[in-house]
Length: 267
Image 1: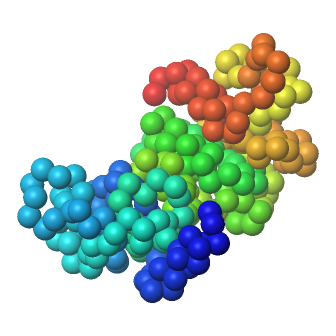
Image 2 (image 1 turned 180 degrees about the vertical axis):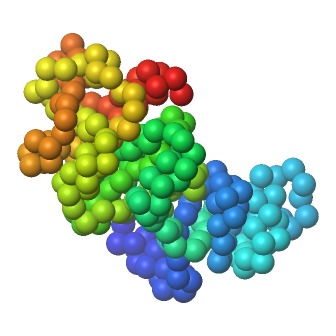
């Protein structure tokens, strides 16, 4: 970006006063937010949209959003580009009410009341928003009970996560815990089996028993699971690989293991 373009972007940003809330970008995240009943505070939409078209997707989104009582502003692409967080806003940026993190105890009580065995995904210091968004999408598709992240030194719910999750952020409970090691110890006391991923592990992910109350721990992109937390896992598992790189990113590894677990659990 040239200095002139950067100055122009900064000027446009200063001209728009974004209301408080979480920013979401893209058509699908907005559609899912509307479907889930999330309060939309402000919608900025590409000015090619109209208030009357019954066929144009952008126009229909604008009409649906306006029907909820939200304010809708029709702006040019340069304005959208100036306030976008991701690189794929698709002509749609909305400010919505803040995401509320779920309470892990409430999630577990709901599972107990339903008579089902919980399956949790714990993410140890995951930093990449795209990975978190992809994992939420996996969790939604697999019927995971909740995704648990640390309160500190971890990516949190934001516009990039929402965009990458393709709307799954609206449906998958996400819990924040202060100390994942203490959370794991508490889960074990409550009858959970805890599985941690490790390249050095001997047990293959498809050779272990995934039935019952289960927590799967996925490590950060570069360092994996912290040593102390890994020591408290009941099982350390690995995904066999035969290539030269011998590395999968967190969301890919999570998807492979999670769907094998769900296959065994009959989900």
